[in-house]
Image (cartoon, rainbow, N blue to C red; front, side, top):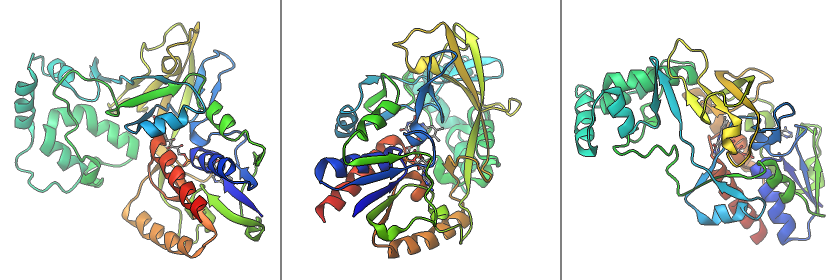
Length: 368
Ligand SMILES: Cc1cc2nc3c(=O)[nH]c(=O)nc-3n(C[C@H](O)[C@H](O)[C@H](O)COP(=O)(O)OP(=O)(O)OC[C@H]3O[C@@H](n4cnc5c(N)ncnc54)[C@H](O)[C@@H]3O)c2cc1C
């Protein structure tokens, strides 16, 4: 009997690659989309020849050398540092908020110690036990920085007032007191030289692996035909939404093409409420080793997920977590089905997390 894997994103592809490499088992990978790679899929844009990150820009980042080395078996990871900017009130600032942002915003020339004291003084001391995202931010950085860089962006991204979001979203002080403007803090950061899709093509290029694209897993599948099923699709869909739909935010993209360089940077955020999009990404800046005459960019809009939309960011509101518990209890009873990945576990997971999880799940399966 063969193994069935639902989903050809990182979660499904890593499992398929590991089982094929370490056993003689036949593996069938299906995906309802007509391409590999899940949300990490990239392709060359026909008009500009730029590598397009079709479901939004992806930068692989991790502190774990073992994960960097694992992916390097399937592509050449080129080091890449994401330096994000924000346009607010007619000026361009550096993100995440750092010493440059603070000095520019307050027209000052603080050193790190002075800036730390200054920002600490901005925090709202009347908030002792922050009850929500807004109170947490106000307690940490005060009204001006919060309103400039967090209020509008968060409200647009989540479609709700920041005071109705949990305080736990802002765990650490979202400010650096040096000039480090590297968006990520992890040691290893990179993008595959030829885009992400090559990784999946190479992972799944094995005589024991059969890939069926444009093939949706639904109740018509007879699970008894398979020794084991690894399911990386949405957990609520697996159970026909019987406890309700789990809430997600999704994003849509408005495509544009420019001659030369459109905005001079990979990502620029627009935190103001008067601008309907959250950010603009210009994709040739994610492959700075390539040269292109034309440039491809996308304005990103955030919205509520409706039937047929791609679920992107799990909302994890109280009612979602109640339904999730019910789905997980049912899933636990199914001994021959493993649920993994961002959709089947209803978590926001970076690539490093899903790759690590899938390597762990395959290790456990192979031990049996
Ligand atoms: C806008 C955005 C930007 C991101 N940027 C980064 C970043 O910079 N760095 C980073 O590390 N991570 C980033 N991520 C996270 C990254 O996209 C995920 O970690 C990764 O895609 C998860 O892989 P997965 O295989 O679990 O899920 P997916 O990639 O979603 O793959 C699941 C697959 O299952 C298929 N499927 C679902 N249901 C069925 C069904 N019933 N039948 C058949 N097939 C089905 C889907 O079509 C899909 O291809 C970003 C995410 C988003 C939304």
